[in-house]
Length: 79
Image (tube, rainbow, N blue to C red; front, side, top):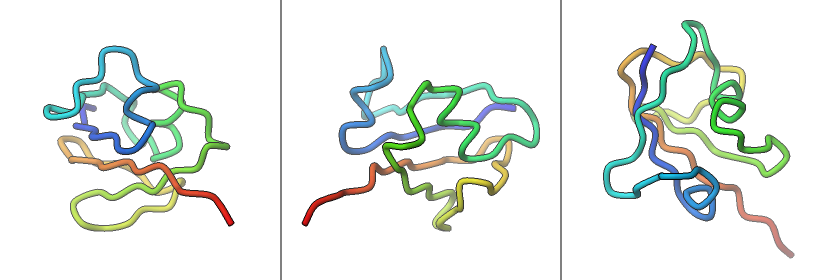
């Protein structure tokens, strides 16, 4: 299935050829999860990410839908 992905923060620099205004169309297997998307994009899971699909925050194990727009934000750490 295909989804459109928009990356935010430093995540957008981690995917070769990513163009911020348009985002990226990604082909992933049916039944893929948000975590599977990170694996497909070769973004390490330990970096942390917040997934928003059509206005709803997802857990890493939530399944994605064909044709959906997925916004992926890098979590911020500090103290």
